Length: 367
Image 1 (cartoon, rainbow, N blue to C red):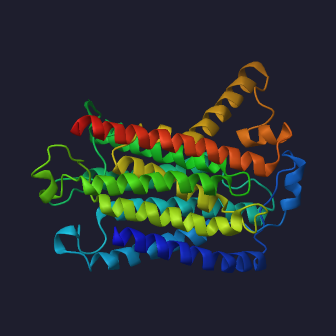
Image 2 (image 1 turned 90 degrees about the vertical axis):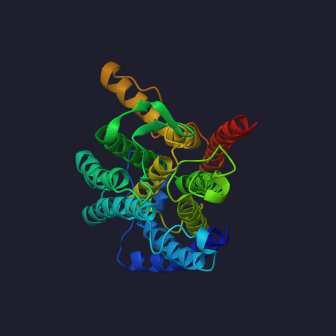
Image 3 (image 1 turned 180 degrees about the horizontal axis):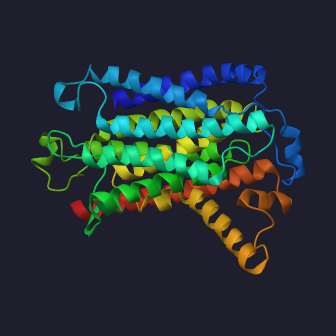
């Protein structure tokens, strides 16, 4: 627990203090967020607000992981998963950083062109797929000394579903799909001040709890598994908890400056990175299908966006006034703050249901 607290505290402080630096740097570079003219008219007042603020919480999370790992050295030897970074950490932080790099390129193109057209949809998907394949292979093929891998060949809900074995190749494909889907889900949600940041805090916080709970009931802990039949067959759960807690705390520090009226936007560098990390956490904790519930707000945003696209292309009619969904409510007359808070509530309810199902499964198994 000490390492998780240290990582979260460091992430919050670093993010809180470095985001103003990012504001000044990106303002000086004239890296203002281009605003689409077809959106709600109130958004035009945000023209010139610096973007790419996600760089701040990405850096804060990586720094916090190092600090948390240093704190691990003060724990009893049996509690230290591995000397130096684990494969789990390399996969999760790799997804975070490299999908952030894809988003950074997208943001840079938008800023240079002075419009909202950055990477093409195919270009963005290609970048996410390349990152997903690279780290998916690492997650499936690079096992620890006891044979445990970051990802599983089975599709999981609250743990692996034994009869849903898709093999290594199928698992890598599933890994890429999860990373891409969740990454784009957070990206679509990032449209109002603080909306994606606050929702990500809730989801990442949930995975910090799940990771730590799995660590306390871990099959890799011989002191626990030798006397308890029920344990979680995952790799490096303490590392998972530490990274999730650090990312959540870093987002809280960023939210101080990102809440309405935002002084800086996270940009695609932030949203693609957060979505990829959340997808990676779902795979690493063996809660792939449960992540649909935990990240329910992001799923709702994506599903309604797909409904709108399909409806318009097949019938020429729009189901919603505008997508992503939060813009529909803006055009319906809701204030930006009301939409953000209410969507946070939806995200919180989804997280609560997901955690409830996770804990209920544990109670059912031990009871």
